Length: 280
Ligand code: PLP
Image (cartoon, rainbow, N blue to C red):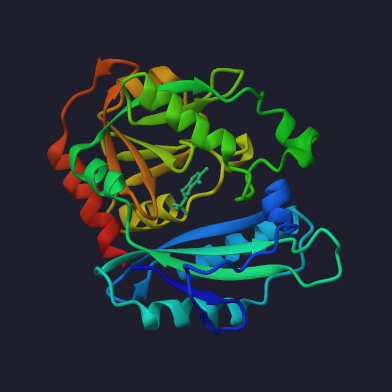
């Protein structure tokens, strides 16, 4: 089942065309998006997702998103959903037509969670570290690279996942030119060491994750300490547990890194998952 609502809140047929061929999302990948997990009709971390949509829009010089309109549009999809208890809700906001004479394009699309994501949640994943091809210095010196924006230009991210899959893994972990760990193509990297959770700082050009933030909030309430600091690949190998987290994959564990098995940590995985669920 799939449900589509346009930004004005009207439902539309997801099997009919709705974009013009000169929409800049089609021609240039010029737009932004969010993917939100909805469980039993409740969107998780909706506020942080809408905050991030506004932040991405500002980075791409798109008109500021109308928050109330996006909330209405999301609610229209959620209300019409008759599928599984979990839905992936995508908000898509593009620069509109190349002619420049129309408004930006906005719509929300609800779909089931992909079977691959559900499988990986259960089994965990093998990950490969892959070079992302930039030095973290460029975050400050080259804002046009849009590092840290959730732009629609995800062809590189998808190519990294295909590369990982073609080389016996399910996931990629991007590494910067200085050897520091960045993020997954669609996830945040989290390591657990003793009673401490660590993740990479957004200043390295990664997308600030809403799932990581929710997990860290819950962990701090439960007495864990949390650190947002640069990580090296060696830190991932040495950690008690390595996880890739995002809205739809939740807390997925990494059982193999660059072909080397990591320790099995079912109790730690269960603990972090229940901390994350406690924020809901
Ligand atoms: N990093 C990237 C590049 C992503 O695309 C995503 C989500 O798709 C994340 C991190 C995780 O973000 P969130 O936890 O808000 O879903």
